[in-house]
Length: 95
Image (tube, rainbow, N blue to C red):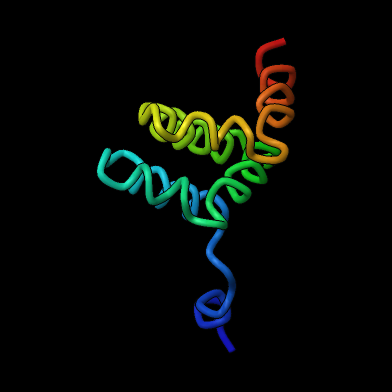
């Protein structure tokens, strides 16, 4: 089996997944639905702890887009691990 056929069966890499979510969140009409989805915010929290800085950057962009919708802010703030992950990102990349 050559390498190209074996990669087709693997899960998509984190960067492509978070970039797709970023592209969806860029559209204001998608933002409420993304936050209401059961898996999106927990997934974004995991992406914020990713070792690859471009993945973290895209995850932060998604969060920024989602937070532009005022109705999303309380749910985002209350999501388990959200605030801690944001604090970790600040410590990891700012200091």
